[in-house]
Each structure stands twice: as structure tokens, then as C-alpha cells.
Image 1 (cartoon, rainbow, N blue to C red):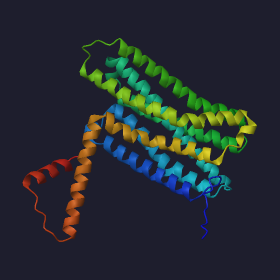
Image 2: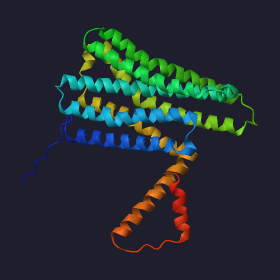
Image 3: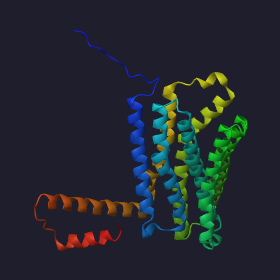
Image 4: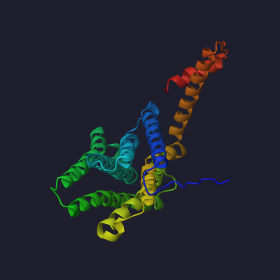
Length: 308
């Protein structure tokens, strides 16, 4: 008896890539939607966290727009307008993410190095800090459209995109170096508020480090391809692996926040507990079984409802 064996062809788009990127889109979108909702809770509605909300929204757009468009490009690779739409959205969300990370790093540096000045910052300052990355993201889309209509050269576009990545990374590195020097020179009797600022700075350092690790391969490959014509025939499998790595970065903050921010973890557990209690109650009512819950549990559920 002979068995037919067929290996999946990874040199073209196939069902494996469709399923992989579809799951990535669902996980990234859902995770950042939950993150945004958590930070909008009253206990987490603090000015530094508004920057994290902006980052979560940008990452949510990666799952909701960038990844589905990438799937569409993979299935319909000959659609030029579709490919242009994906590149515009991919540039937009990527530029917002990296500039927001730089803004967060500089804001944390200000909080740690000049704490008294930081407390005097107004809401308008945070609005500007949040808005600037989105404006720069729109400029990234504009540069790609101008390239499409031959209004700027490929070299000019290459310089714009690389400057959009390198400049915020430079400011981010500078900010963390200053915070590191400040941490080494800090007094043992540091106030509790300063300790919280440093803890949040370390959390953001982890997120920024993850961003660099997941984005660096794709960024380096783009530079190599631009200057090396023979290198442009990259293996199909390598391109998709780098894109999975890049898109997965938008889910890393969802994992880091519960591990590093205690208030976030508490509210997340309370929300999940309340949701599970509501689901259990609904299932019991659906089966016609009378639910007998002690008054203490009911009171606890009422307390949880205040966070939802």
C-alpha cells in the first residue's frame, strides 16, 4: 500500500499563513481592546497612563487593520491599490507606536529627573504629546502616497522612513540612559512616588526593548534590500516570519502590564471574576435551576460591578 505525502508549500501564500495571521489579528485586537478598557477605569485614569492608552489604540489598529490588509495582500498579491493601502496603514501604525514609545520615555525621564516640574505639567501638555505621534503617522502616509505618484524619489522616501524609526529610538535611548544615571545617584530614602515612577519606567523599558527586538530584523532587512539589489530575492518564508514577529510586538504590552502594574492586575482580575460570575449566573438561569448564592457573594458581586 502506498501513501501519498504532500508537504505544505511555504514559497507561496497558503492556508497556514491565513490561519496564522488571522489568529494574530484576533489576539492583538482583543488584547489591546481589553488594555484600553482597563486603563479607562477610574483607578488607572492617570495622566501618564493616557500615553499607554494611545499606544494600546495604535497596537489595536495593527490587529484590526494592518494584519487583515496583509492577509488580503497575500491572497491577492497582484492588487496594486490593496498593496498601497496596506503599506500606508503599516507605516501609520508603526510610526505612531515608535513615536509614542519615545514620548513615554521622555515623559518618564521628566518625572524622574525633574519631579516637581513634572507635577506642574498641564493636561494640554499631555494632549500635545499624545497628538504628535499621530500627526507624524499621517505624514508617513503622505510620504508613501507621494512616492506612489512619483512626487518624491525612492531615496527620499527611504530617508524619511528610516529617520522616522531612528530618531525616536535615539531619543528613547537617551531618556533611559539619563534615568539609569539618575537611578544610580538616587538617595536611599527615596519618596514612594519616585519609586512608582521608576517602576513604571522599568516597565516601559521592557516594552521598548521588546519593540526593538521584534522590529529590528524587518528594519535591517529593508535597509539591506534598498542598497543590495541581489538581496531582494528573499525567501518567502523569511518575510512572513519577520512580519509575524513585527505584528506580535503589538501584543507584548498586554502581557507586560498585568505583570508589572499591580493596579492594572487587580482591576483585570476583578473584571474577569465579575464576568465569570455573570456568565455562570446566566447559564444557571438558562437551565432553569434556581441559584442560591450567599449574601456575602452577592455583596461582592455588587462591589465588582462598580469597576465595569
